Image (cartoon, rainbow, N blue to C red):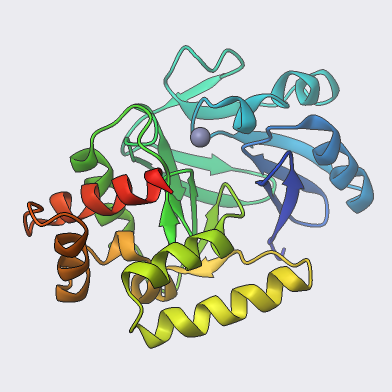
Length: 255
Ligand SMILES: [Zn+2]
């Protein structure tokens, strides 16, 4: 049966991703129950499971209400801050879903939070608040080295895989990325497409990992153009990927 994946806009800027076939759905990061319940009802399908990338409220707050309606398994990072978890996961684990039929691998991607995980296979990547389109998550509980390493590992996944991020931040991210890499034609093109999509009220996600590699400054920290940009921001910045990443992230945080 064909599997489809749709964004359910929630809260200010979140996307709850609904992975479904004709009968059932699994939700990724349901930060709000009402919109998720409406989407399930609109499709006439039931909920069979919940996947969680990290413990932040805007990714888990809807779970208790959803469980009242559908007592389903909850897969997420082994972290006591996620009280509703039934299946704690760690690096290297596999999640086998029956309905919709789907297998996802689990990768530890700390940086945004200490226990953040990413679900992936050859065609899809659910990366929560680790990787955004043209950006990345803030470092609330991790170091630049951890986040750089997490992004490196995501960057090595299948280039044709679609990236399903936790937030619609792409338009603002494009403005920042253009300010540090103004001569990247692929970025200019993506920024234009993103502006058009947002003007039409459409999501800018998912996006292929291959497209992100061409446009996302936080995945391009080894390139001479980004190293030069980082050293222009901070003349003391070194040339390692982690130092370049840290400088770009600090500049983004200051804006
Ligand atoms: Zn978060």
